[in-house]
Length: 308
Image 1 (cartoon, helix red, strand yellow):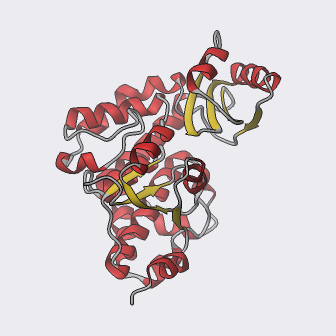
Image 2 (image 1 turned 120 degrees about the horizontal axis):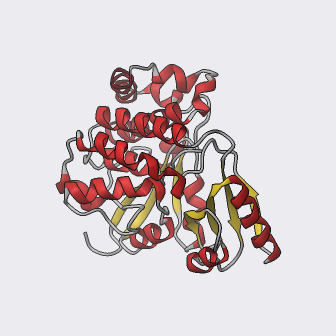
């Protein structure tokens, strides 16, 4: 793919969920209904009912993750079959990386749904409620190395490098609180996140081994992997099953290098489309000077890609 010619498709991750997500695509398109049906069978769970109703489980990580992935793939496949929208490069933020791997054809939908449900369950079980925390640090000129140095001596990690002005920290609740105090003393704005576990921190390392075992059972179409950005490396996946699995395992407790992903994608993209129930990535891309088209609802897709 030549520089500046690719259509890039990106998918948000956990936190973008909302009741009713995907219902408009499901009502209109057989392609979307087929995705929800396949995913529900794979998960042993009525994912359409989970997404479209007022189900409290939508906020529980074990259920949130398969629900978001299913909705995003339902939207993506509907746009492809009904509106002729294709993609050349793919990326996703945290959980969204799995959606990107499905969209690119690296992982099958049924395998991915089972995999992320297990991922969510392991994450939820890794740390008892209340022992971990996450805080978004906001301000101009944030740098990973400087922030990590400021957290010296604390059980706190840089979880997400979301944009040049936002880094999320994650770890032991008391240490995150101390880190927040230090950063606020430096003039940084800090916002506590309503999360159920300290994602992308060293506190998640205990689940790397059981998750690796789950990944080992999944068949990967490795030839498609170089189309997909890797959160862990900041670049693109290699056409290697071992490398893909290693990157996904390391992503659990490692930093989501989204700024590096955006820069890698932006240099090769003529257009970027965010597809999902929320649109958090659009603002991050804007910070690096890349305009995106955000598709959150069916009417967004029809407006952007109405057939001539």
